Image: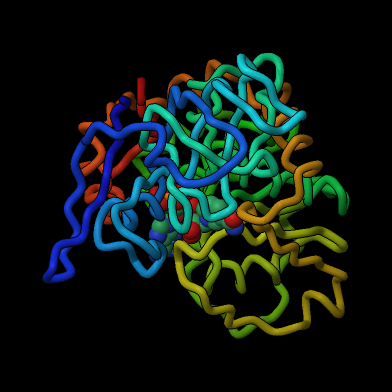
Length: 326
Ligand code: NDP
């Protein structure tokens, strides 16, 4: 028997999350059983712990879109008992039972071996947010980061914090956009050399091109801010579009693409192929300063998840929550 956070739906369609005891034979089909050590809390987890947001298909459900732990048994030759693994994406924790249990049974295809230099707790401090930040930085590198500061929008959030720390550690000047001036010292501690107030970039302009300012951009915000940023990119520079914290629209013109050769790069973390995942996790182990990661960690347990799920949906979670599942 093992413990898991189980979400049940009652006859009136209301969901209830509580820690329950489960047995191995209740786990869904899969070829690897993992003893989960740590998980984390994402916005999607908030939805899946609560009313589901259309993501959960069947109840009872075990949420948790990310986990890291040790392989217990494997029917797949790529993994053996004792291997350290991490999982993000593939709709685990939504369509399939996820990481909020002390055991998880999943497809071997979904797992990535933990790289040397990163333990399960650190991997969950990174989580989907940090993994996506790394993918965004790698996409900028593939297209060439130009001279000048690299802009990070939504900088005090999960994706933005990790992108800031990685880019600064790689030697880039980082301009961090935040709507929370009180996070300035935190962002500087992560390596930002310039803090840009959100209002400066939230105002719309009729000018499709402004002064060439940014050598690259990791954008967690989308909407009007992304439209504005496109017109401020240096010639040939790229923007990794990661998120929609400020809106899903893109009220832009094509002028930055046509006259400045600006690239808009789409970043998806959920369906990334194995090789790209492995490369990103290896880069995280070498290029993300772990002492800075440590400063972002907020510890939690399975029992804390119902309230953390509500908090994250209200935008009240700060830093990177690391759930000790064991
Ligand atoms: P967080 O909620 O931790 O961070 C988002 C940040 O965006 C906030 O901290 C805030 O930063 C800023 N922000 C919030 N609202 C607004 C607004 N109205 N206008 C401008 N800025 C705003 O989320 P994550 O970092 O985990 O995720 C960021 C985005 O990336 C989300 O939209 C998420 O859905 C998406 N995402 C996409 C993935 C993918 O595969 N493409 C994977 C993971 C996340 P500040 O306080 O500094 O202003």
